[in-house]
Each structure stands twice: as C-alpha cells, then as structure tokens.
Length: 196
Image 1 (cartoon, rainbow, N blue to C red):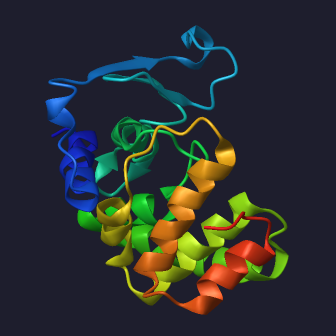
Image 2: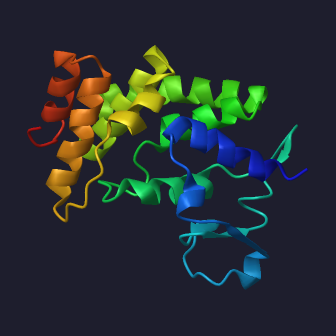
C-alpha cells in the first residue's frame, strides 16, 4: 500500500478542500539525489497537480507505516487558498494533524513535543510577523487541535499582491479562531504584524 496516498484524505478532512476538483490526478515523480531536476530544491517540489521528490529526503521518510510525505502534498492543497503571506503558513499544525490522522502515533507524539518546545521558544524570541504567526498557529493548535480545521474554514480566499494585506487576512482568521482573544491580537501587533 502506498502510505503517501493516505495523506490526501487527511488534508481533505483538515482543509475541507477537494483537491480533485482542480487536480483530477496528481503526478508523482521520485528522483535520485543526483538527478533531481530542480536546482536548489529542498528535497521536494509541489508543481500544481504534480509533486517531485528526492527519494532520499522526502518520500523515503519512513515510519512504521512506511514512506510518506506531508509537506509537498500540503503545498498542493494550499495553492487553493490564493495569495499566502508565506509559502509555509499553517504548516506546523496542518502537518502534525495530518500525521495524527494517518495513524502515525510515534511520529505524532514526537512532533507534538517539538511543537510545544518551539511554541514556547517563539513566544519569547519571535522578532517579526512571520514568526509570530507560527507561534500563534502552534499555540492555538496546542490549546485545541480542532483549531487547525477552523483555520481553513474561517480563512477567506484572497488574491492580494501586497504582503501586508495577505498577513492581515491571515491574522484576522487567527483572531477569529482564538475566540477574539485580545492577547492574540496584541501578540501579533507587538511582533511586527500590521493592523487587522
């Protein structure tokens, strides 16, 4: 069984998006390190209805379930969100939740522990809006794992060119998902995010 294919229904459940409506099929290509056709690639690349992997880095990640990749597949889903403030926005919580949904309990436990440490560190050291957004994403997920589902349902589609407008759209969503917690708004504003 191709465990990588279990990730698609996991992301469909998390995001509420049917990738099949845009991509009837996804083309997978797996390359040896020396034959990867994308210079400077980090081990994988999402190409809109196609995903290229470096075998030793991405798809060769193994758990007791076998090889799978949650990173590049999430890029495919996030292309449907429109303009993003960052290429990896919402990745922390989305990837951890996908790992939980596909049943990789040991990896989920490890990633959750790492998220707790990183969230605490980022709340102390974040010095820009991007890191503050990661801190909010992680802390809301740690408070309530269902928050990740709300991110995608409350986020409005946007095609803004201006990065400040993209960040404002995401930060409004974080504020709504937090239950309008003033501390969430203040944390984002205090760490370089513009008004929202």
